[in-house]
Image (cartoon, rainbow, N blue to C red; front, side, top):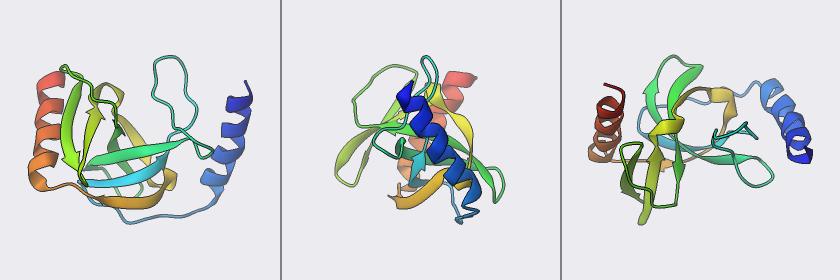
Length: 127
């Protein structure tokens, strides 16, 4: 329960910061994902964060995001690609709409070819 209490305090700060970063599809950001329930992917460290790929910009305030993991996972629920010399896995089963308020540091941008890999895997999975 302590993790949930800690996350609630961070979530209050994230909500009231009023920071609106400009985003673009294909960017990877550190995102305050939070402490979640059941099989929902959690953030890590004291910020409850993890990298997230901006799959589709929905507005200046929100986007469809795919949380990333450095664990190499296989199957239709995942799409792997190389980023900054490391293997990353997009957890397609954890896609969700995210507020830009949760973003706090841009990590970089994937090449269009890798963004296409993730988008095609998403379309195949949810078709």
